Each structure stands twice: as C-alpha cells, then as structure tokens.
Length: 259
Image (cartoon, rainbow, N blue to C red; front, side):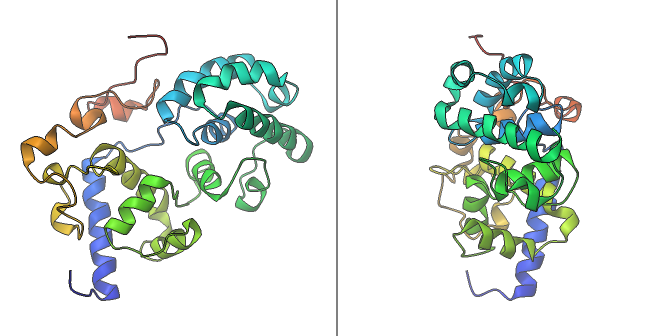
C-alpha cells in the first residue's frame, strides 16, 4: 500500500468503524454482568481464557459472594474451587479477593468510576479499567486486548506494539465519544472474522479497506467456513446477552454442563 497521509488514514479508519457498526449493530461487552462489581471481577477472570468460560463460571461465584464484602471475607480455597475452570485460578483468586478487600477498605464497597482509582485495585490494569469505565459507567475508553492489537496493526492504524501507545495512536484517530463502541466493533470483528491464524478475508465486508487483505483465506466459500459466533451460525459468548443481540439473530451460549 502506498504511503497514506494522516488525513487519508483518519478517513479510512473512521470508514472502517462505520462499516463495522453496520455489521455489528448489537456489539456489546461479551461478559455477563449486572453491576460494576460483577464486571470488574469478570474482566479480571477473563485473562488467558474465553469470555464464555468466565460466563459459565461467574454465576456460581456471584451466587455465593454477591458483594465485595462477601468476596473479601471468602475462604480462598473455596473460591479457587469455583474459579478452577478459568485457568490460573490461584492467581485469579488472589486478585479478586484482593480487589474486593481494596474496594471495602478504600472505596466503601463501591467500584470507583475513575481510571486512576481503578488501576490501584489488585489485578486491574488499564485494559480492565477501560472495560469497566466504558460499560458500567458510560465513560469513553479504548480496550486494547489481543484482538484489538492485531486488527489495528493489520489495518495500519498504528505500528506501535505497546498497549498504551496503541491506545494513544488509535484514540487520536477518533472522537472520544466513539472509543467504547469502537472497541466493541473491533473486538467483535477479531473474534468472528479477522482471526489470528487464519482470517476469513474472502468473507470480510471491509476487505476493500484493509491493507492486509490476502493474509487469510480469500476464497469466499472457504472463508465462510471459518466464521465464528453468530456470523457462522454459532452461539456467542454470553449466557444472558442483551436483547438487541438476540433481536439481531444472535444466539446465547449454552449453559455450563450442556452438551
């Protein structure tokens, strides 16, 4: 691709986001949660595993420990047993009990709505903080997860590799008000179509805007078979997805223990 002016890059980036908004009008966080506490815990648990695995695990956790006070006072061994399916369960148990203790001690048992407070909680980095700010408090933030990093580099939005530099570079291309939904659109696309090892280029609606077109399968029929989640007829990651997702033909994930 010939060198692109900054203005052309901004135009192309915003056009990609508009196209993705049409493809995924129901894009949303794929972790089940009912309040900020559940979201921060679920996001910490989602490291190194799938959102589906977290969604299958958290109902038992929140049934037993519905508040930060309950989880702060929990027996770690009992929490470990519940969290075992998410992997790294000892470290995750330490984090969620630690962050619950910090919420009780420092924030009156409430999840704070400021970035500088959230990142002080055990196990909470900028990525987790922005998920919570954007989806529990409606404050703009860019969530730089592995999907986001991969796609914005494929699209040549940035050459940066460090999450904070990616966040700054991509944030500069969009108005702040777009940041949270942009994150959902990009992550949805990364999970469904633009996969890490074999992107479904031949089934990708934004292929004409993509400098990396051809890295994956370009044959439309073969590419179609690579699609995941509702685009390929599979259920999504949430057991209790938003109504808009269901109305658009999305399927909830099967509960734990079902075939």
